[in-house]
Image 1 (cartoon, helix red, strand yellow):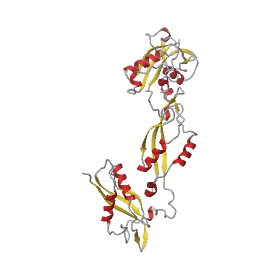
Image 2: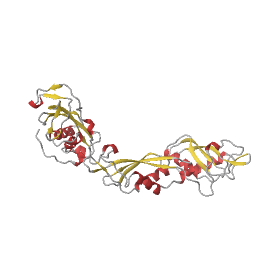
Image 3: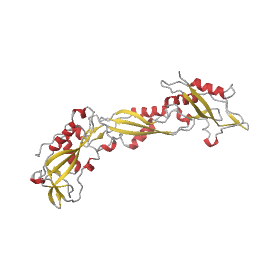
Length: 373
């Protein structure tokens, strides 16, 4: 196999994965030679294990060798169009002369990718041969050849340098504190938790597609997405050819209730909330739970896609009559659940429950029936 000039193929090289150095089959330890008489004379004894692997003529590690091969890859149309992605493993015998011979696919991806991988390996430059007991020897080498489309989005572990918010993690935290708005629902429902958003940092540093993968509440999810959409440009990720590539990024946005408005008492601790008292909370001017159930049903703004069914909503009536901490005992689906919880939070102040004549916090459970016909 003769030496050829290296032709740069950015789409192939920038897709080189971080794990590629560990994918070489040869290990650094001696073993008995194997005979392959059909090869040329400098490969009459082929070692599976050697003291030193073949390297490029100017030195370098396994990554440098694989980069040189990736530079020779010509992406088939099916890869450029994003229909096929993956890797091909090619086994080659590197002779005592450093020339590769008898390249063969040992793990296939597709006929077109297999052919492109073989062609790239056959065009690799002459190498320094492997060495065993300080002597040059022929060696078996198994090489991964990557096929990823120009539109491939990398994970953080697959790039040479991950994407970075301008100024780093500390600057990102400061930016979130400055720009995050806590939805009123967090205070009303006494919510504590995080929204996790996955998004793409494009090669130009702009934010691309995004999705919520760990929701908290609708208004919390919307606020987290708003924050991601308003990000300044990031420092983009770099592939193994030091060229910018698209990368997935994950962000956790935390929400917790703030202090209550001036003049408003904080919610009563849960361990001091009653389930039954001498005088239960009621709607002003109404007696009994039926009026409360009917009011909740009337306040529901039904979403576009609603799920019929029966459930119960639980909430606390504070000593001042405010409704806080609504929760559903069973789910009817995210959109329907949120519509019911929103209706509860829009209830007017109730006449609070009383125990021994004193207003106290009481948790109520009210049935809710959704029947869309």
